[in-house]
Image 1 (spheres, one colour):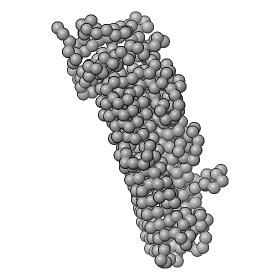
Image 2 (cartoon, rainbow, N blue to C red):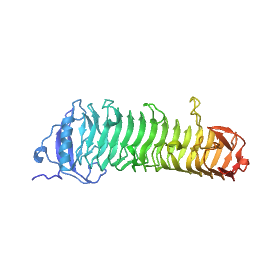
Image 3 (cartoon, rainbow, N blue to C red):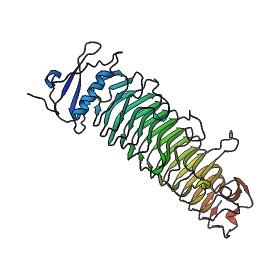
Image 4 (spheres, one colour):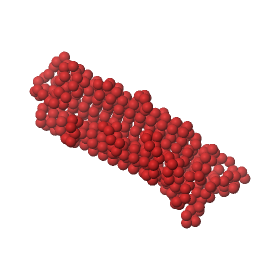
Length: 465
């Protein structure tokens, strides 16, 4: 009987110990608990019965498997079938996916190990790609340099699905998406020299429930080549131990780094032990940073900086950072923020720095509302409002500041704008509850008890003790 495109194609494999294996191509279907992809028994047929031929694959061998794997990828892609690879390690050079390519491993026991020559898996203009239950090992071999190097590199691809991958030992990025759309979900990405996931010019990307650790420069990067709406969603990820091997003043060393990308939502992530920030938005307008747990950060835990307009930073926990939340750079257009309901504690100063010592709970400059936050343990101040003349239309109400050197500091520069400070509770401030300052240096009396009201500043209803 003839075999149609929905039949199973078995490809004879030789194992190093003479154990018979089978690489199978199955028609696409819902994922099942057995990993076959159809949820039902599928009959097998020989390669001769299918009317096709393919080189043999050999698992757990030093023999290069590139030609055999690429042949299977090409044929299953043409037929709209899913390539299911058995357990074992396959040493291979670069593999290129086709439109509709779907590759599934055997419950994570299937490994592709790079031998060199470029990205392990790549595709250009190939929609509807799926990779699932595979281990992808870069083996620390060089793939190339710069932003174009990713162990998995997908460019101008739509409807991508990367699910339950174990990506490791990359000399570039772990996963690189350029101008693409889809989902990266439930993957483990570790021991990469650059970033675990780098998306540039996304066309709709969701990055969810991934486990990311031990990256050289950043955990997740969402960038655009020019300022514009992006709309990526980053949620439910665990990110730990991010270094800043590339150096700089904050472009590296972050759990999540958003650059020029507008309307990005970052929620419910657990981020720890980063050289700089847990979450850093640079020129990222309309960013939402919600309900993230951030611990042990080397600089500012949550940053909205440079030319952005609009940041909602709410319900986050920060435990251990030089600054909890900073919304800054009004001098280059950084403005408009709501900072609400965050818990910030255990801040520290970086005394080794010549100027940038920090120790602040929340710092803002322009068009910002600071409400309902709880800050405890700030060696410089709980809340800092303005810097020099860079302050406009800031409101701080209903906040609790405990055990800070100074509860709230605000710039006294005569060219700065308006500020309202009311109904806050400040407890245990050792150098004043509310103080004016010049570039971080406090001066004058404690304004919490002065009932200050001028054309520029109104301070009232605060409780200090």
